[in-house]
Image (cartoon, rainbow, N blue to C red; front, side, top):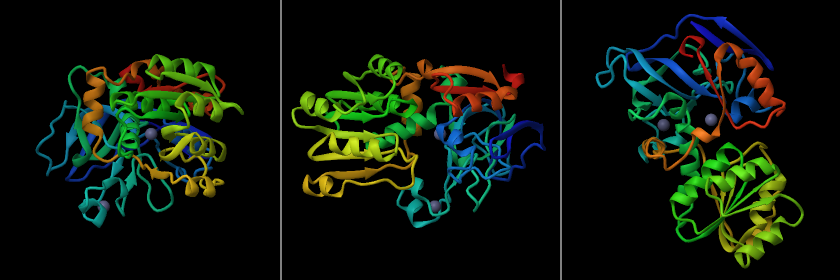
Length: 345
Ligand SMILES: [Zn+2]
Ligand SMILES: [Zn+2]
C-alpha cells in the first residue's frame, strides 16, 4: 500500500509499504480521510518525543472496513467507521474504573514515543482493534467523521468541569480545539463565552461558532475579562499549554472558579501558585477523551457541532509532506487539513 511515512525528523516519504498485519480481534480499514493533528505537526521535528521515526502518523481518520479478524463478528466489509485514537488494554485498574484514557498500557494510533510504535492512518490501510471502532451515521461524510477525535477531546475537556450551565467561560486559544471547546461550552449551556487569541481571523471564526465576545490577547486582556464578567470568569479553559496562556487562564478566573487544562505544548511552565491557592481555584487536567465518541458523532450528524467550517483543505496523501511543512511554518492561516489516499479523491 501507499503510505506517508515520517522517515526521519522533518522528512517524509510517500512510499510503498506492506499492508498492515491484523490480528484475530482487529479490523483492517481502508482509509478515506485522515486529519493532520497539531500533535503530528509538533511531533514531526522531534520536539514532543512522541513521533520517533520511522512512523506512519495519523489518528483522526475514517474509512470503510476492508477485512475483519477471525474473532470479529459485529463488523463486516463495507461498514463505514471511525475509531478512537487510543487503544486501551481493557484490563488495568483504570480500564476497570472506566477511565480508559488513563489506561496503564495506553497506545495512541500513529504515535511512537519509544515504548511502542503504532502505525496510523496516513496510508491506504490501517489495522485497528474492533473494540475501538464506531459506526458512522449515514449522513456524516468521511471528512467530517475525521473530526470525531478532536470533538471528543473538546467535549471531554468541558465535561471535566462540574458545572457549566449558566456559567461564564473564557477559552484561551481559538485554534482547532478552542473552536470546538467554544461549541461544546455553548451546547452545555454556558452563559457567556469569551474567546481569546492572537489571531483576528480565528477570533472572527470563534464568534461565528458561538463565542459571545472575542478578545485579542494583549496586556489588557485580563482586565477586559474581569470587566465583562464582573470579577473574573467562572470557568476558564486553556487549550494552548504555555506559560503565558496558562497564566492568562488562571488570572482570568474568578475566586473559587474552575480552570480546565487541555493544552500542553510545553512539558513545564511557570505556575502562579499564590494566585491559585489564595483564590481557591480548582484545576482540572483533561487527557484525550473517555466515552465521548458516540456523542461527538451524534452532534456532528445533527449539525450541533460544526466541523465543515474548520476544514482548510482536502488534499491527496501524496502531497502530505507539503501540507505538513505549511502547517509547521504557519505560512498560511489554516485550521484542519484532511489528507485522502490519492485513489479516494
Ligand atoms: Zn489529534
Ligand atoms: Zn488499561
